Each structure stands twice: as structure tokens, then as C-alpha cells.
Length: 286
Ligand SMILES: Nc1ncnc2c1ncn2[C@@H]1O[C@H](COP(=O)(O)OP(=O)(O)O)[C@@H](O)[C@H]1O
Ligand SMILES: [Mg+2]
Image 1 (cartoon, rainbow, N blue to C red):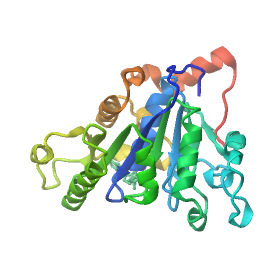
Image 2: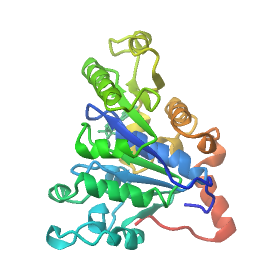
Image 3: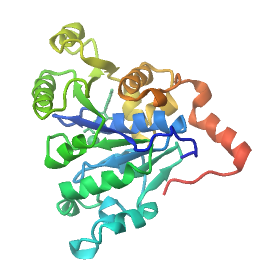
Image 4: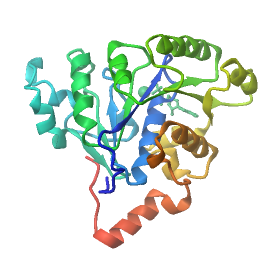
């Protein structure tokens, strides 16, 4: 995280959500945080996929604490409301790519303790500290996801190029509209796009009134990056995946956070070399 900030009072909040599992929410949330974090904006990912959150695994982090520990003590006793903010520095992981992470509970059983009110409190606290908060969620419209959407400026709604996922996306998007999260707030992202899947992408776009802001290709680059704890914009900045991620980012972010072109010059290695020349070492991820 660098000192530069956008001058915004409250973080811009983006909830990454989907109706179906495996749509690429965690992949997208980590990539978006990377794109914005590298530009020097104070960026946090909050993993509200409380039971099976995979942000820590995807980034190969071993956090000592999760957001649960700022809310509850041993045996699930609620801590005073101030505890979360007081202990925030111990709860958060500073990732060397330039963004922070608030991880989901280690044990799915602990997730049951964390309610919608807790999530409201967490988001209220973190939005005072960052320029951008990216919220990763489970594949459902749970009360917790609704709470997050309620505090969000934009919803990144993801689907993959297959009939069940697209059907669910339609229902999901309509449901959001009914609860006053209109099309102006929603940004639809189609992931795992390939020519060979028996669906015509153009037709799919038309069915959704051209609402997809990015068509991210099915690519081994994504699994490759996730399997070694990195993100595609860091390791393959000129790939089609990175270009589409950037397109999605442009459509989701406010003007002051629009990303520069992803290019070799801003790769993690070159930033690391630049910053170590300037200031010695950087923080290590926990
Ligand atoms: N564009 C893509 N191309 C290939 N594999 C992808 C792509 N997007 C995601 N994946 C893979 O699909 C799986 C599910 O992605 P993930 O981000 O965990 O989805 P979600 O968080 O929505 O469940 C992961 O193994 C990930 O590497
Ligand atoms: Mg996930």
C-alpha cells in the first residue's frame, strides 16, 4: 500500500457476486484489487465468502487472524464494537502487490457467528480507511451479500459461458433490480469465454442487451496464476485476460481510479526493483 490516495472521503465499494459457483469471483476480485492497488490507491479485499472463502488460498496467504477475530473472542463471545477498529492492523494482511486483505474465518463453523450486522460494521469501518474496497462473496443472494450490496457503489455480477450460469444470471440481475440495485449499478462480466462451447457470444450479448462490459476468455493463464498465488495482470499483463480485466475495471471504477494501461513497465518485478532502489525492502505478506 502506498501513501497516495484519491482524496475520496469514503471508499468506493464494489461487491463481486454471482448466482452460480465457479464463475471467477475470487479470480476477478484479486485481479481488480491488484490493478487498483498498483496505481497507488489504498485498496482492500474483504472476503465475505465466510464459509468457504478462498482469497487467502488464492494468494497463498497464511494470516494469523481473520475478520472473525475482530468481532468475536474464543467461544464466539461478541467483542465490544470498537474492538474491530482497534485491532484492525493485526487483522489485515498487507500484500506486497500493493493491496490489503481481510480474510474469511479459517473454520467454516466460525462463519455462522458472523451476521449481517457484523458485516455492516466491518464495511463501515473499512470504508473510512481505503479508497477502494472489493468484496468477494459466496454464489448466492444471502443476507450478507445483500448487506454488502447495500453498501456498494457497484455490483460486479459474474457468469460463465454456459446455459445454467446465464439463466441464473438473468434471474439474479432481475432480482437485484427489484431490490433497487438497478442496471446503472450492475456491471455484468462474462468469464471463461471460448469459441468452442456451443454458444454464440454475440447472441448471448444480444440476449442481455449488450450489458456485458467484459468478455474474459477461458485461459490456462488464470489457473496457472492462481496455483502459484499470483494474479494474471502481474504475470501476463499483455494477455487478452488482462486486457478484458482492465476493461471491466474501467467500467466499474470512478474516474479518479481508472487504470493506466497494464504493461510490462508496471509489472510487480519492475515495481519491486524500483521501490527497493528507493526505500530498501517492502512489507512481506504474512
Ligand atoms: N477465465 C478463466 N479461464 C480459466 N479458468 C478460470 C477462469 N476464471 C476462473 N477460472 C478458474 O475457475 C475456478 C473458479 O474460479 P474462482 O475465481 O474461484 O470462482 P468463484 O470465486 O466464483 O467460485 C478456479 O480454478 C479458477 O482458476
Ligand atoms: Mg470464490
